[in-house]
Image (cartoon, rainbow, N blue to C red; front, top):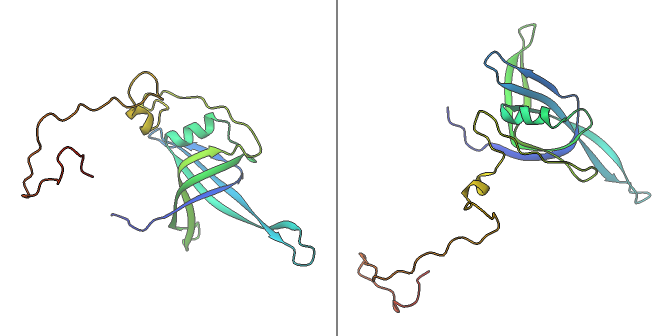
Amino acid sequence: MATINLIHMTVTGNAGQIEYRTNREGTTFASFSIAQNARVQNQQTGQWEDGATTWIRCTAAGPLAEHMRASGFTKGTRLVVTGTYQQRDYQDQNGAKRTTYELHAEDVAASVRYATATVTKTQTAQGFTGRSQIQTAMPAGNAWSQPAPQPQQTTQPTYTDGFAPANPQQPTI
């Protein structure tokens, strides 16, 4: 079943208890909640005060959950979680239908607003090398190097629509 119009969101807050588990197929899962603390301005004093706390249920799976565990994420760790917010229907122990909402994590990071983090690239049997897609698309060697220059066109292009640029020496946009 294809899904469109997913709700993409990013939440920053302190993690509640993180539960790690592995299924029979060997896939690791992480279930946790993020405490999103609101700040509200007191109308009488003008001072900012703590407001209500909203708990957002999150799940992560596979290498993402494994990397969370290896990173030492525990209760109280300030995290930035990005993913899709989805409704999940289930039956409770008494057979009653229930609905819950979860943020299915696509990425989880430690917030460095109030702490520091050390990044360690990983290599696993699943082929993940710790590089982003952008980095793997870069030429080998210096990652900050400029892309290789493209060879100049030596032949006149063929225009099948019957219209050629007004000045063939100028590149067209």
